[in-house]
Length: 344
Ligand code: NAD
Ligand code: 89V
Image (cartoon, rainbow, N blue to C red; front, side, top):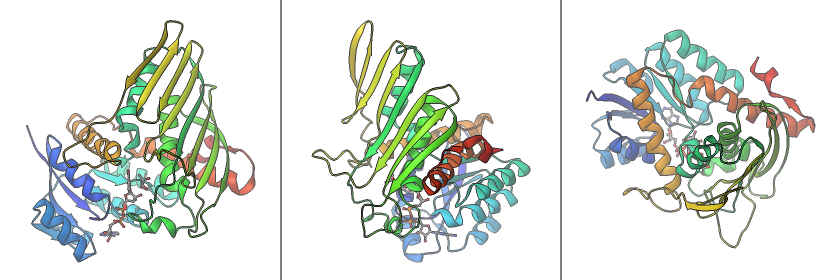
């Protein structure tokens, strides 16, 4: 099978998962890496045996010798790096959050479209085993037509120890974590017409909001709630599980903590274990996320080979990113926001 050659830019905290993922993916390998921090470049280069190492992304692109680029840097560099990839007519994967603003994200989609190259946002949460299990049950019609949902991520996990920059931004939980939860809401219940959001900051040691409650109106007529918190101390810490409740015309679905899926309808209640695999390189509690990294990267290779659009293409992710912008706008004004206007 033909092997796609990739270059990875950004060798930080999360990129290590992506590098393990690439090691396991069938049909692709990373042949070059880049980070402006020589220490990170050395750690990742030595760990994964990558000889071609660059401190500067322009030099990496100038030398070439790869078929796609995987951008694993933090958000400020996403637009310039995606535009660099487009300028070199190279397919690109870009980590979430897609961009600092929706205007930047739209420009990135246009740059890749104009260059005729695929762009995928590394929005991996919809690739988690339990999330896919919920969507599969829904697709069987077991609960009829869904009319209400709740997508909930509440935790007191110290996310700042691994990602200290999260404490420093004006925006925190919606942009960093809620973006995943909003994407899951779209993935399960479809696109959104309008939303209303409330936020607050509980932890005084951080700059941005660490609690958000968002009410979504879906195209289908369903209503859902996305609620996220890093200020919720629980007896049994659920990080990084997204819990889901869905009510439909014929029954209900519940995804409980511990990856327990419960489906109730006229036939009764069935319960199943939808826990993710613990990959050899993964560690609890991150294994759910780590498995989804492998899954999304394998999906990228398959779509690259077939020429089909990826599930979380740039164009698709604009609709998730618009929810992030809408949530901040709604929280600031106290008013609902028409999401369709942002996307027009
Ligand atoms: P990090 O700060 O640990 O790593 C980023 C690395 O990129 C750093 O080593 C930095 O030196 C390098 N870098 C930044 N700009 C660069 C540039 N222009 N050229 C070359 N190198 C550059 O950050 P992180 O925690 O690994 O997060 C990276 C991205 O991954 C963020 O966008 C974050 O939101 C995302 N992330 C996603 C998930 C997920 O589940 N999808 C989880 C964690 C982080
Ligand atoms: O997605 C992220 O960037 C991470 C985490 C998975 C912990 O939310 O912050």
